[in-house]
Image (cartoon, rainbow, N blue to C red; front, side, top):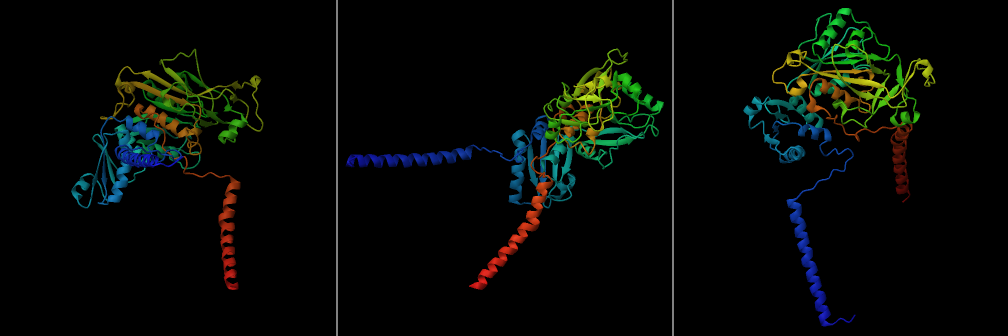
Length: 476
């Protein structure tokens, strides 16, 4: 191409237009970046964003939320806190917050009950709670406690070898209890020998797999409590006492004489199960207790089948939801589980799917029959749930124990059961908050490799490198 003056001038114009457009594009990008913000959280588990549980919790709160942060006049610190609270304002824009220097305004700090800098006052409506951490779980638990409007008392029956809610060994329930206390529940062991009734302020009674027979008078107290509209959760393991058969008749159910097993080795290997009597559940029926847990597996060790009695002459007309069912390849083994097991119909084995959890409801004639549900003034409970009696029966207690409550969706399921029985329907389906990438799980071989590398190979390599460098310098 011949470079004439005209062509040269045309190229100059092209260059000028390019640079002008380039500058305009840069200015436009700068303007757009100032006016519009976009953030993306690429961490595994979305740990720099609010979890779905916190989002659901915030969206379900109708009352105004306000954070009062007591910190010194530190701009860097306040900017970090402002960004943290901004995550909550994205979900709930009307959420308010303010910073207060406790050294400059000690009178207000004293009125709010603040004792030192770093504390945060969380207000939900007229209720107030002080927290000392900005972690999402702490804030979420505080909001849950306040959204309940009051403490929820759960009475645990004791005196017959039941599961101990306070024990911290593998067969205790201290892990579950610690989680529930953070969200506003309080457990109280109760013996009918000391008091011949269920406390009036109890949200519900829990019978956790008694091993010894109950007295006839104790059974009468429980059945009368249920007839009068009290809420109840009954956990029964295979081989437990039959002294509560009047309660089973009142509910119109019967328990199987055996243990449910699942011999699918591939499934066991995928879920990390090492015993056929640890049965996974992924079918939760239509009950609101586990509406959003479908597809998530919960594990039930050494459970038994629950069946309804069609011809039962019940004095109470229950609405029943079978919300826990095992997989089709499971069965109830009537023989002792020892060595190889196989389904044998001629021995009385029952093929799955089998029901191991039922939820019973009925509308009460009057709020006075709610068995202590209306005992507290100012407690936030849905009015429709207030007049509804609720009972849960599960053919297993091990899924709530310290050894298993952290497996699969067991903790979420248990929390939902407790919230449902306490009539806190707005808190259903708020799953436990956890970051899935904060724990490193290694098998024995992986642990050995890491130990050899860091304790032997790496120090030895550094020593040999130092000796090599020292010899090279001596030879110079």
